[in-house]
Amino acid sequence: MNRITKTAMLLSSLSAYRGVLNRSVPRAMLRLLRSADGDIYSFLDNYGEFYRLLCDRGCSSSLSRAFTEAMLFDENYFTRAAAAGSTDRLSQEEKQAVVRDINAILQAASLSSEDIISGFPKEYEQVLATLPHWNSGEPATEFKNFDGTLDGLLRFHRINGCGIFARYRSFVWRDGDIQPIANADTVRLSDLVDYDTQRNIVLENTRSFLDGRPANNCLLYGDMGTGKSSTVKAVVNEYRSQGLRVVEMPKERLMDFPLLVDKLADIPMKFIIFIDDLSFQRQDECYTSLKAVLEGGVASLPPNALIYATSNRRHLVKETFEDRECSDINRRDNMQETLSLSDRFGLSVGYFVPDKKKYLHIVDVLAKACNIDMPAEELHLEAERFASLRAARSPRTAQQFIRSLL
Image (tube, rainbow, N blue to C red; front, side):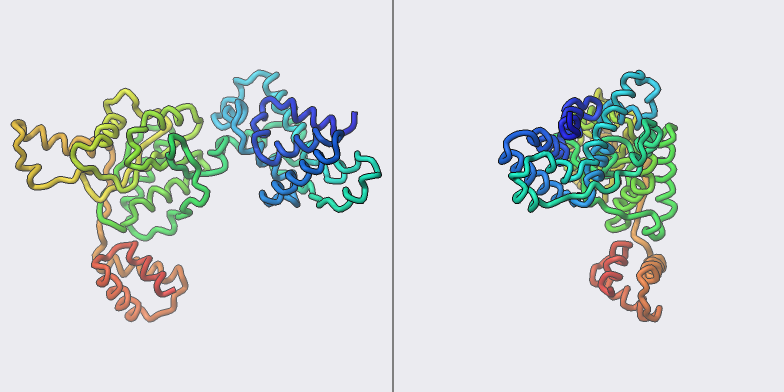
């Protein structure tokens, strides 16, 4: 049995890491190997398709990277247990299946284009010599010098999680499923200026959540452009290495909350369900759905999830004077209904526009970070003029002003 046939058989019999064969490059490689001892035209078709996919993924100089990253980001019984720190529950046979699969995939990743082409008769040499070649390159760090020990993989998944949650940190609920966000906001806590008191409250709550201590759902409310959403995204970026991920839930899809929490409940990671710019009109069905999830409904949050919401309204519901002078017989009940949703957030943090002194301080910090060399008096004068044109002083206005200078 030659090396090509043996590798094809090993890949065909993957068990623990069988999901790797759903990825385009490994799947195309298996098709190529299976055709290596057959019809030359079928082989050439598969060769061209494999090389195209390899180039599309930017892996023509490192086949090993394509295969080993597919393993790192595969979700299976081993990676889920590793992320949860419960691999001691796996049997010895289950662990041996993992080691066997890893060795099989590494063997496939080490094949060169010359290894595959060499099996064909000399009569095809003139065409085969023109085929593009690839390099095996280096595997991911966790698979270098792999000797059957799973310690490196255990560390990786304990820190980064498993499946798509190891590759990405931010997600959105879309089309009835959790979809990754490839270009997530990279804002860090160090990028945010002032509002330290508010952020520290959110940070402490998040740390309690990650440590398994009691933590509350959090409502960040207040004026526009004061950093409410940025705080949530920065907190997630700060604690990514501790297994924290964010799933943004569009307000109009709050009816899907039971579906989302069912999907999150079995994932061995911690999640912030982020609802941005939350507000309701009266008689909004989503209002009742969210209220039930927060407290009192059958489909409650699992222990590994919290809701962080932002809003420009303290009580979330658009309220008019007519509402206060409603014709309901039980007027007090009408007011209680208005207040009942925001009351179900155990933690409410207010963000309000800064006064002139604080606004100019934010401008100074941002200007220094961007190496803007301008006399302070001129900088402040221009910053105030910029704010007056937008009728608001806020951290967002300060950032926009700095960008205009750049």
